[in-house]
Image (tube, rainbow, N blue to C red):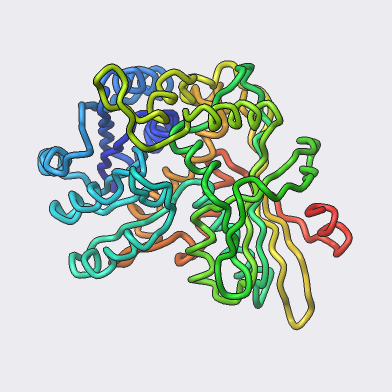
Length: 407
């Protein structure tokens, strides 16, 4: 029996989620898209109708005010709220779901507006409330976090008895033709990139300066060779909690020289700041102003070419023998645009969002409380990745290949 969902957020990811949900009427019977700017919702709804033949409803929603979301949920009575809005709004949306008895799903952990701090403890604190209410909250059902968690859990289930090290490598091999643009929300992207780096080692997180550790990484299948930089990403926090055998966890992302030079200049002149300043008698936040003048990532699909390559390299033991396994997905920007009108970065987040929602609505994943992706059976999710647009590959690496990948 099909179910009803409310999608909050009408950016690039929200557009992909709406399109992919509409393609599965047997699962997603009623789809409502809400965002602060209803015109964006209406544009997505028009595209969904043209591409899939299905109508979705839309409305304006200021999700910063819990009462607004409560009123929407009480009116529509959905089975699930899919949060692809800003991570600042995670907690107020979780509160609304608790008040209205609606399951919850998001793609990124909560972070406060006044500090670039990416941690799950605020949302994990909701465990007892969701459990008592008999509701499910699924956290981080994007690609990273999300698919990277699933890749790790799947490798542990099928290739290892114990995983001791993981390296998550995110390569965006695309070219959008702009002098400077971010491939997802500029405000979140820049906060993430400029935050201190942390990686897990010897039972605790070690902190290093932002972008201070660089390697060269050669992608499989001819995607190319890229400079990758060590960063902090929230899936490491949940993975080392739920897979305690992991002794080292690192996250890497590729950046071009032009991107880094622009970012350096913007930092030096104060445009990446998140502290309010006064300009012409009005209080503004520099990073939010910068976001307003940068290209909208949701509009980069038509100009972006190339491929992404995102995966997890795991090292551990099977039957007492050390082994290394790399599980990855390669995604083509132009093919994504042809299907849903978005570039691959939005697509690789939006497809897993839809699949996570499908897992909950079909009861393939269930349980009261707050959950991270790796806590559920990875097999049905891995099957759906192959079915719905993100096919994956797995290769076993020799010690020499492993050292070359991370050289």
